[in-house]
Amino acid sequence: MNYYKLGEDKQKVAQLTKEAGFYADSIYASCLAVEFFLKSVMNRVPDAEPFEFTHDVINLYYAIKNKYPSSNDLSEAVKFCRKYNNESRYPYSGTDIFTDDFAAQFLQYVEDVKKYVDEECQATIEDLVNKFNKS
Image (cartoon, rainbow, N blue to C red; front, side, top):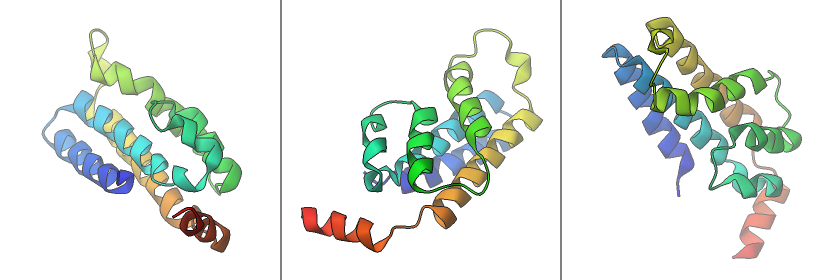
């Protein structure tokens, strides 16, 4: 599964739904984009693999961060994404929180996580040897 491509797709969906004024949907898509971008590197982090079929982005991020230290602490962004993954998906009450500014905040979280994955989670020679020795 190409989690990175899924992340890019959800990032686009988040942007488009924000522009259309569907803020809860935008936030939900942003949360999924964060999850997919993090999952895109989990195959190089054995401690992260148990989180593949969960929405536990908090522990997924910490497992990845142990191998690829982050120059910016993204834990608050990841925690917000975990919290609002369900709350934006099932917004039964308190929907006044889902505003243009709040959706923009989540789009920034996506950008921050994508930048972390792109710039700081680089595969090492050891990662490549491990990957190709398994095949």
